[in-house]
Image (cartoon, rainbow over all chains, first blue to last red; front, side, top):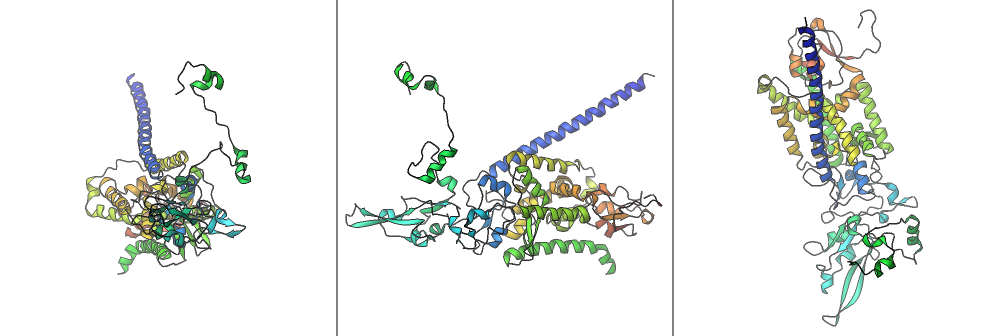
Length: 270
Length: 275
């Protein structure tokens, strides 16, 4: 008589065990898969050396907002824009361009931006006074390698300067005496970050084997001063003070007041 | 000839739909056609109507993106279509990976692999796990997780914009379906299929089984990529109600006895017959 309930009990336990094991196994597989998956996504989205179409929002937001439909690519009349393919080592399916191959020709009507359905390309960021304005685009910033730019050797070349669609504003040419010969001048290009859109026409035009002027994403090419330094003579820069935040660092010597710790003479400041 | 047409009419329709979608998208990029621009992630129909992948939109929300109006409207249109009408038809009528996995399934049958390994050592529910996982990863990493690995968009984008190494992913899916798991990708793993299985639960277009005509030959079950949805074969005269049915209609075609047909789901239960 007793055997039957025992058997029942055993079976109940075994069913529960089976269920728990099944859940644990599923969770384990999910964890393993999730780990590999997120590691891959992390890796593939880490690429920073990527030039986005005009009007692209911050890269971090771009990656979650772009739906990878390729409408911008189709809208581009110069075939500048590409969609990252598997094997390109770029966030898959997102648009980018390689200026040395095909730069952005800065169409005044910016066809790639208004067509974007997701807002990853933000029309407002390339609009001035209600009119589309490609000149305010910030796709990147041209950077000059003055070791390999032949203008810095004293050879006259203004290919990049001439190619620049915002000639004179984004790239200007500076005159300097060539002390080596004593009778020639250096005519060297200078990029102005406030005007450069990063279109890459200069990079395309550069005569050296590997371009000595090239476009980098602004995040990569530019530094950041932080709130410690403000141009006191510049009304616009002074505005940054309003959002300035205090940064406090605490080290061994900042325990005492500055004078005390300098006068104590007991410790090595370095 | 007539029987041939009867045996393959839906298959021909499906292939025609799949290929013409691809052609329209391809033409938009290559020749500037404006009928259907973009790709399956998001498109623009006739330069006015946005169509967007609702699952991609869901991941965007999970990742913390602000949904633009176009994406919202586009995703809504697509969702409503499959929710009310099509069911999980995306998988067998629009998705390009279906061409790859169907090829694997046919070869599998021809090679008799189905007979050798009858047991399928995996759960059909895996796709829902993957679906949940994709949303969790999207949430944690702030990116649309599946969109960065999706072989569907990989192949579709590949055909429209250039394939890159995308062919390798297709080869892997083909071999996986051929040797590892029957209908493995579409029937077990794909979270987009899982998503549409959930969306398509209540849609109107259904395959209907008429038991009186059935001779239990089980041809339908052999050919069905989601066999579990055909549990009523030779048992009950009801609609195939599972959302996992892709409305591919292969079962209808292979049936020699007129026991399967497309029907519209009965919204009001018929009291007389008790259905």
